[in-house]
Length: 600
Image (cartoon, rainbow, N blue to C red):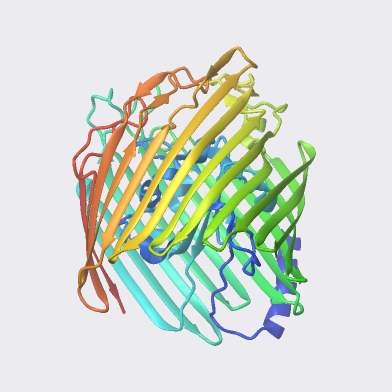
């Protein structure tokens, strides 16, 4: 860590000596990991601004993801949230906040899991969802996609916003943000607290106890045009019921995390820009009755140097990185050193993007992954797209070193191919994508807890294929977003001896959102329809229990009281639909929330 701090100090000194100061935000393009791409988007991408997020009526980042059904979020009461994007496993989606991975190395499989509850919604400037392989630019975990969150910085002048919401199940949400910006730089402080009594999570639980949630997040950021420093502290308490229904009361998952980030950038010449990203995240998780089972402590340290070099209207992205993941309690460590080169250019109306990454991992040795993508533009507004890429996912510290871990686990590897057509219309844009992903060395948990025995192993494949259709339109000032997603998964265990569907993945998902501004009112309606899915009752990774499909209707309206004040009303599951997404667990019925925010 001392070397990282020294490197950051050198970069900071150089930047402040040469920089023209000012709180002008520079936003990274997640698809290409640069703020100066020379080609348009090729990947299937969803982008949401702070206003888009506010319009959903969401209280938390998890609430927001539920309004984007194509990401495959499973967020059952009293359970661990998971994202199954394009049918992949939860650890196959990489989450970034300001360019830094926030996947939770303290979780058993390395997925973000309960860390989703610690992302402060009111501090988000932009969310980008990139579907498909992103491992060449971002490394491990980005098999199914990347979800990138950009947080707000201080705008010019002095600003403050307070907001609160109250709703069903004694839900309370408080948010405070204060910022100041000038030509000399910016500073921003945010504090968020969310609590709810929740509901009784397990259907079989006859105690009538409720499984509540408490999230608290505090962040401070300072910086200028070429440098920013951030510190974030979060605590999440989630009451849960035991999977097997034994002694369900008073069980709590108590997760604490602290993150320090340093980002610098410098223009070396007219063709060369340099960025340095440093981060350190510490986390711990206590579980069990009243969170009395003390968990291990973890620390993840990463340093990445990015170079953008423009030559003859082409852009080279060259990056080197080093990451160390540690269980500091048991002194266990995984580390990787990686280098990638990505090249993009437009040639005769064809956008080309290709790259390669070399990984040197402390457990798995050397690996190479690559991608190649084309987009052909036609005069009639049509764009044809094709991509091919490979990706990998490294096992977590827990899967390798815990008392049920397997030191012989290998990394999962995948191959992804995709074709798409996009059409620009006078009223908006439409797009259809066809994709297929084949993953080998699937890491499987056998559902047992046998200390001293390996309960994790590489077993067979996870293959997914699907179709994504989306239409975004503005007709007579009505904003319409429609999407349909078909996804089919096939899981094989132990070669050909067992095959089936991956659990908790609906084959068909349809979403329709309509909104329109009427004077000071901005109402919206969202209809989400999901087909049946299968759950896994034998813990072999194969779906074997059918869960019925369902349709949800969400309503929201915002009212602009004046230029500083705004009121909101949100009704989720307006028809009070009774449905299940995990066998044996309840879901919320109709909930109603009212809120108000004021800007100073």
